[in-house]
Length: 431
Image (cartoon, rainbow, N blue to C red; front, side):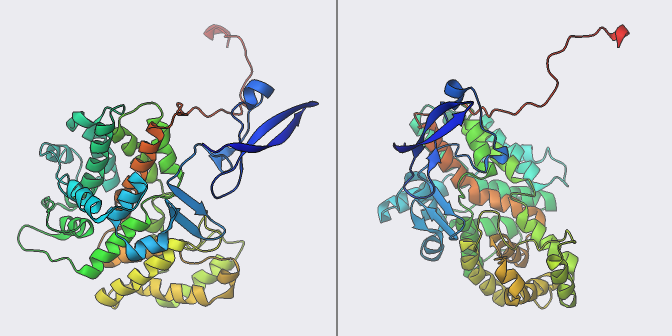
């Protein structure tokens, strides 16, 4: 917990109140208002909590103005370029990059937990064939607590550790099985002799009738997508996980809550919205029309996949993923895919247009991840489940940090009540 080194003075009706100001290791100072109600009898009002720090954390830092994203102090571009997803998982979970022995041990533990309890296959078959994969994931992840009773005690550090590894390991299997179920293909079991990203691609695209070799370029691109989405500070789904866990709920229930929140189109569905926009544009010759619409302040159309709510300059993840997008498109080609043809030309025209440069509306991570997943053959319904696989380690890291926080309290936001004042009940015959 940061120590207060200065204070802010608040005057209300002639009374002055001193509020401590806390200074983080990096980022803006924070006014501590925890005693404001008891001392002054007032609350603060901040819809969406956009100016409110709900916790202290040592995991992830974002500076949207600088286009900076740090995991435990390490820049995301360095991690995406030099590291790989499971090493980043270790970093987020334990605070430091692993030694060679620690990395081998951690990857072995994850690899050996990738299978699901066999009875869970019957749970999948209880869903309609046209169920959205996210609907399946919410249900199945929540049901993990019914199958793995030995890792639901949040007060036992070992059970917390086991639950953490289990979810990181099993989430790709759950997502792949959800996909296979919706397209009517047999489930493909995970294998222990290939890496995390390759295993996921194989479970999604292999069939029992023939072997499936994962192209290393596609595997690397998938690993980068996982890495770049691993954590993103106190976003909506992470805050949901923290709020759920503040009640003492078991870890599987908390992560299921995070998945449910991620499902929203304003959060995890952004790359799906981007692909839908590209399909709406349809052909390369229509791009100028849509760029003109995006510039027209009287037209509510906007280019999905450009700009970011947090990053006011550029999305540092996008610069990394652009390289993978170029590699994947070069490998797979775009000649037979009009959506990808539109994506490539839209990127080119938008980057060359001063309007977008002046407003800093650069392609973001959702633009490039959508292109990559489309090229790989994933339907848009799988984009958000893949996001959930990536973000699981971030949710778990935040959950583990919160559980041991001595300041932990059940989340209970206040409100600005604007309803009716107290009134007396009227019998029905008199209404």
